[in-house]
Amino acid sequence: MNSPSPADLGRWSYWHGEDQLLRLGVSTCLLGEEVRFDGGHARDRYVTDTLGQWFEYVSVCPEVEMGMSIPRPAIRLIDEGQGVQLVAPSTGEDFTSRMADYAQAKVTELMKFDLDGYILKKSSPSCGLARIRVYRDGMPARRNEQGLFAAQLTERWPSLPVEEEGRLNDPGLRENFIERVFARNRWRTLVERGLTRRRLVEFHTAHKLLIRAHNETAYRRLGRLVGSAGTIGNRELFAEYELEFQVALRTKATVKKHVNVLQHAMGYLKTILTAVEKCELLATIEDYRLGLLPLVVPLTLLRYNIRRHDIEYLAGQLYFDPHPKELMLRNHA
Image (cartoon, rainbow, N blue to C red; front, side, top):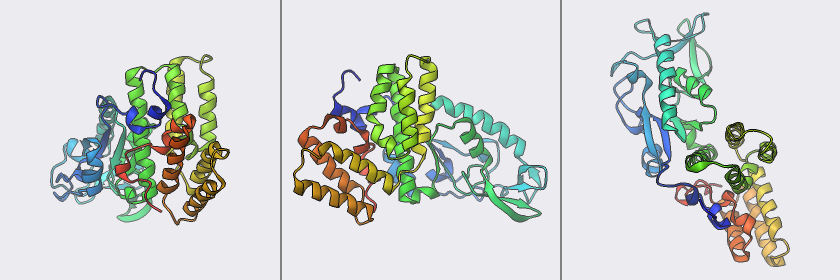
């Protein structure tokens, strides 16, 4: 990363080297492995066929890895007044302590892989990320827990992008997750290649519009943090930035936020474009706001004008090219 041009900094591919593969943890059953309690699988074609072209997977099945058989009795979360426990109702066997010990050790092991994200199996009492059923007296009592493994993963690794495969069917949630994964890989690559304060400024500058599309308040906090370089130690600075950066991107970008960023970017062109060109660009942004066009349309028009008029600051913004276009994450209206 020696003396990159603004155009380099604004391309997703510049930041992702072959030496730093995009690496995702994934529930093993989603890859088509027959590890479920009934001996089946839950293969997810988007995970295997689409994302599999871009990511290396580290597969995990907590039940099998902690010694449970295939097939095996179904397990569920119960709460009979002594806290949430993981139990097989048909046998009465309690797996709570075994799962807790396994999860503690497994998350420690996974941290050594330095993952860029994790895709969990929905509705699983071990891997479910949210709204897992908790039973009392054999009946559903509430639905507000995480699976025991998922809880350990998210608690100990708060900067890691984590999502359930079911939620990836939502175009907005899918875009947000994959965007965070690519952003984390860029950070990881930067650290591996030697993170300095100068490169931190370079990284932050390239992500400014992307961050603003997610969380304006966090964008200001990150700006103050970068500006504090020299007043706090590098280790503290980099650790705080990484966590705050991922927290910022965790906030879902909305149409309104995207429109604000698009209009902000257009401000750099207002004295250059003709009246007709400005009207065309504004109309495209408005059609996107109304849900008549996908985000990729005003972005493409803006990128054309940025290249045409050589606007260096905007050319260096990853907002316009944060991940491979083949994933088509911004093609939904």
